[in-house]
Image 1 (spheres, one colour):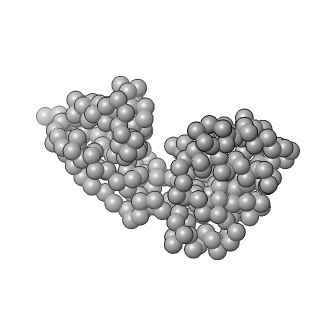
Image 2 (cartoon, helix red, strand yellow; image 1 turned 30 degrees about the horizontal axis):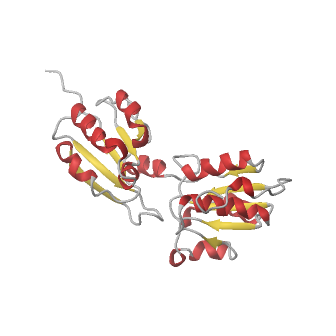
Image 3 (cartoon, one colour; image 1 turned 180 degrees about the horizontal axis):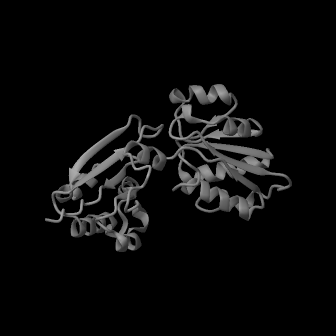
Length: 249
């Protein structure tokens, strides 16, 4: 026992032909693919991890025996999913976003499966990156490309900021909700204000999704970035357009 919880290694289940299927419906349930539906219907047990019951009508119609477990802590969630292998051979998890893009839950379960010799398969879906690129018209990436970074690795990522290249910065909201460890968000503000002029625009973007609801975008100036970061909504991405080159006389 660790902190009152049973550890995953204590389950001691037989791993013969056991497999975890990690899938996603995309940003909202209507984006679920036939491939994902088919894979999860072959599972003995399915968990819905990111929707409340009042929003789960479509998913429960597809998987009537699925269990909703969206309102439990992360570590308990991992233990519950892995513990299902005590009774089942094929366990499915249906999350949102893309399991291959900034999904700590998918990666954690993959590592637990590897440690416990359980098969692991994931199915891709639409992510916030797909939606943002579409909404902002960045599909061709433009002449300078597009710089993607996450706040969690900001100290390394900040060294490569180029004001001539558009920047998409993911997870500033999650860093704030985690208490901005070691002054992380303060460093984000300082670095951005060092590189961009005070009057340059910054956009805070929320895609339409099961977690954040309707699509929203809010514009602020670089000079006001510090105040704006204090009230970010869940699943917000920061977009900073490139500074247009000065025209030659």
